[in-house]
Length: 104
Image (tube, rainbow, N blue to C red):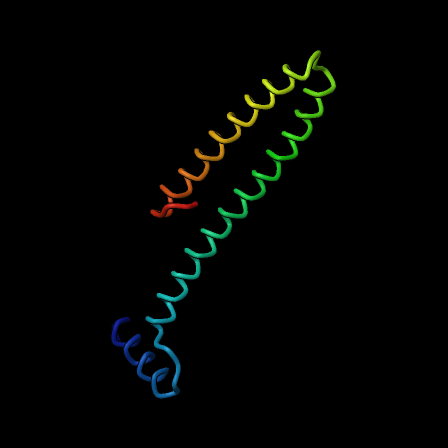
């Protein structure tokens, strides 16, 4: 018996039991795996963001502790903010390119 004939037989049996066909379950499984991968990537992005924020906190403390003036603190914080904004934009763009969507 060919595999496709056997699958048709299984699908018919599942249908009589009120269950989705094997083909439908296979497609659903593929969709769920893709969604899981997308969520894992978002989690990795969130973890990276938290790590970056912690690093920024440490860097801010260092800037404040070593600066000789308020103006110097302001300049360094503006530069840090600009660097982080560009870094975040690149991360979001990579995610959007990979998943074919625009993340805001």
